[in-house]
Length: 239
Image 1 (tube, rainbow, N blue to C red):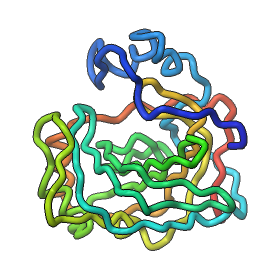
Image 2 (tube, rainbow, N blue to C red; image 1 turned 45 degrees about the horizontal axis):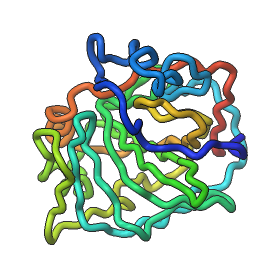
Image 3 (cartoon, one colour; image 1 turned 30 degrees about the vertical axis):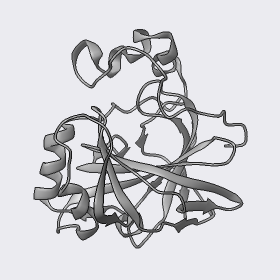
């Protein structure tokens, strides 16, 4: 399923400004620039609505996440935490290094038609340049201590990366204790919408307080691409 993925860039090298509303919104991404054509023409686009699945004995995602000095950026589309070298995941024989995680409110992916309050996308890349994204769904509930360093230092406006002296973030503590997952082949959810991304969405959500979620949403607003057609793709679900 994932044997012939192309080498991907995380973002377009150049192109017009895009967003989530009006003429810059997702419905127009595919015609804004030739490099964004996959946004409109691709048949393996993300996010998706996860409904019917094929249950299989899938390899566990082995998380090797270490604490990292907090480097945070508001890039105008999301709040992103850039991660230091040394953290990775392994799925079977495939290893990917953690590059960054960022958030979308509400969640881009749906499960049986439901959007969660937020999703964090953990973006990884292997030595061949192929991407794997782990999605962690957030629902409103108790305060999330692991998320607190990010919420306390949210950049209010777009700008360069901010390195926060003496503060670290532990991505491992943002994960649910139970790590079953859905997996499918998809794309970047933002222009250029490049396909060939290995997606894994953890089935168990984690919680964050209403205050934490509201603080993030006040910065990123609504930054979720609508769900895309499956075009015959099979979504696998771990047993």
